[in-house]
Length: 146
Image 1 (cartoon, rainbow, N blue to C red):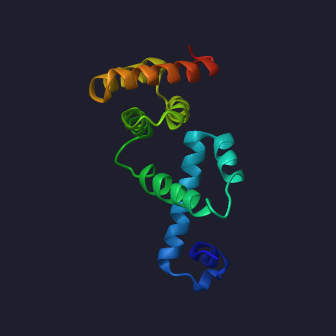
Image 2: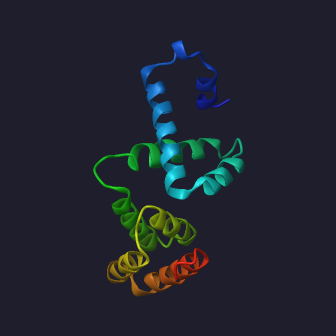
């Protein structure tokens, strides 16, 4: 049994401050993850969780969403712009499609998403931006935005 699974079974009074803190980060992360990516996406991710992937899903909720996306230093629009650029730079196309939808949910307009991808063309490569525009066009088209 994983350390995480052991902690879940412990009585609340027996849990250390760091474990409660991890629970708080996980809860906050799950909330933000749902707000940014949508319930349907998170529900699919959770439903597909296996004993093998459980620790990874916990890491994503706790760290990416509970530690980074909840920080006060940048608003979600800015985080979406940075995320789109990073995904283009890394060639993470499946994640890019998901985060194009998230960018719209976070208030970016279609034109702003296009500007982010144009900026990425200069710093990440024209071929990468070409692929990104294709993906964004498909996602935005399915959403009825272009």
